[in-house]
Structures are given as structure tokens and as C-alpha cells.
Image (spheres, helix red, strand yellow):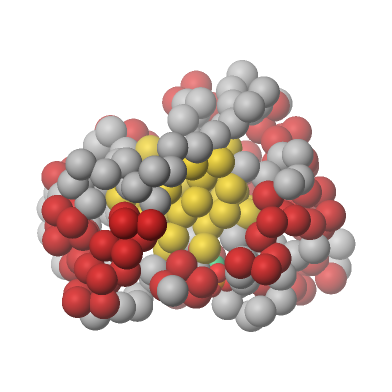
Length: 238
Ligand code: 13P
């Protein structure tokens, strides 16, 4: 099974609008002839529309960093899937560990947001991953399995081949501690195995690794059998 590699940049809450436009322009110029990768940029909400204009007629795709589970309403500070779609997003991150940590994201809300993303014709990028404590106490697989099973509970038949899952061990995010290629492959193989019991598309779904990816550690990671790309934070800003 060949799965096209995905390189996704999660800018998080970084860049001024001007810096964001410069970054998008430079990525656009440098990847003009790249056809063997899917490139996705996830800038802050306020940059989405101008960045989308800057990427017009390029193959680079745009993603939101989260969305609200409702389509509209009295939810001050939130953004709906339809709004993301209207400003040019094709994707949306769901369940990022920073949303789990700072915004009460749970496996239940991941599920609701997954449904909302599909309703808005967005491709969900669902993030899972264990904390350092969970890894050290041998719970990595249990945590991953629970995140996947609860996140997709009752909506297994809505999982599409195009949906993307990102494995981001919390201890590797922004810490400079990168999972070894073996650790990452082991977790990815487990995720794919778990997906096989949930959906017929397990072999088509692309699994991204995320956590302190840098130019010098990525080439080994991407060679692993079940790793189909990267979700990159800090290094995606340069
Ligand atoms: P870093 O690449 O900065 O570790 O961030 C990873 C991440 O959280 C991407 O979503």
C-alpha cells in the first residue's frame, strides 16, 4: 500500500500576519515543483484568509488548528467548521494535546468535532499521544487505544480513507526530545492495528508523527513502515 506523504506545519500561536505571509510565500516558492507530497499549513485563525489568498493556485493546502463542535451560535471566541471552509481550509486539527491540556479537549469532544468537521467537508487530522508519565508507567498503548476508541465511538462508519491521524507523544512536543524511529514506528504500528478493528480503511489512513521533528531527525522517522508524514511545530516556522 503506497500512501502519499503528508507534511503538515502547525504554526500554533506564532507569527505576525506579515511573518506568516512571508513564510507561506517562501514555502510556496520552494515547493512549486513538488508533486510527491501533500503539504498542509495550519496558521492561526486570523491568518487563514490572507494565507489562503497567498496560496491560491498552489497545491499547498490549509488547515485550522481546531474548530467548535456546533455550526453556529453563542460561543464567544470559537470558530465553526463552515467558517474554516469558507476561508479556504481543507483540513482541521482535532484533539491536539495543547487543546487537551489548555482547552478541556476530551475524547468525547474529539468525537463531536470529528462529526462537525465532516459536516463542513473538512478532512480531520486527529491527534493522539501519551504523556511522559503514561509512557513511563507502561500505559502508552492503553492511552492510544482509549483515545482512538472513545474518539470514534459510534461513528466508526464515518471514518474515511482520507482522514489523517497524528501520533504526537506529549513528552516530545516542543521539548527537543524526539521519539526514536523505533519508538515512533511501534506506536504507529499499534495505532494502525487498532484502526483495523475499527475501520476497513486502516491501511489507507495516513499516520503522521509529531514531536520535535527537525530536518536532521526526520529522514529516519519517515522511513518507518507505518509513518506517512510529519506534523511539525517549531521547525515549520523556519
Ligand atoms: P514541535 O514540532 O514544536 O515539537 O510541535 C509538535 C506539534 O505539536 C505539532 O502539532
